Every structure is written in C-alpha cells, then in structure tokens.
Length: 138
Image (tube, rainbow, N blue to C red; front, side):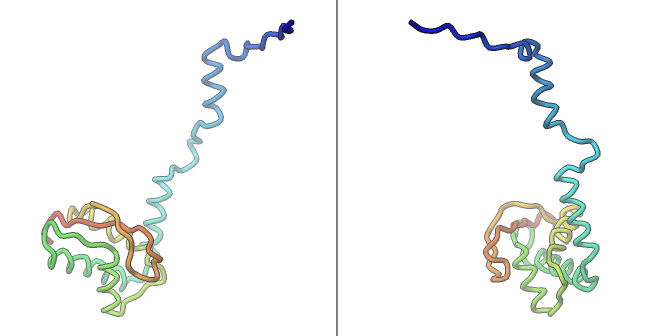
C-alpha cells in the first residue's frame, strides 16, 4: 500500500507577482552600477588618453595611409597599423589605445568593422582582432 504524501505548500507560488518578484529582485540592475558598454567606452577613452601623443598622431597617420593606399572597400587590421608604426619606430606603453584610434576613425565615417581574424604578431599570441573596411576616401 502506498503512503499518501503531504501536499507541497504552494502559497508563495500562487501569486504571479510574487513569482516575478522572487526571480527578478535578485537580478535587477543597480542604477548606480555602470553597464558593460559604459565600462568598455571608459576603458577605450582611458587607454587613448594615456597613450603617447606622438604614437596617437602616428597611428592616425598610419590608418590614413592604409585608407589611401587600399582605397574604398579595402580591409586592414591593427596588425597592419602596428607594422607601419614599427617601421616608423613609434611606440607607446600600451597599444590598447588602438581601439580608440579605430573608434575615432569610425566616428568620422572612414571605416567600419567588417570581420575578425587572428593576429599574426607574436606579441599578440594569435588573439582575435577586428578587421576594418574602408568606406570613405580620406
């Protein structure tokens, strides 16, 4: 003979509002907490602000050189910009500022992100980098 089990108490699940609150209160965003996108933008700006001024100017020049030589529809990556910077013997303490360079050029309407590829620079350890397409003559 099978024993009868006590019914499970369901009072806390009978009200839909209570169910929603129970699951959303724990994950509700904190309005004072910055979003991932805000933190990313701040990081890009901070890297750009802290980069060597000569490096920033040279990096922008390198992007312009690539845009002029490849023409509209041409594609390049940070590897190409870094190769030109290496030839110019211009450095900065942190090349993370490259993201700010590309963001600036994108905001001017010169380039757009179009793909990803693996870096060929040994220092980059084959990490994934963006590929940029030239959309406007400079």
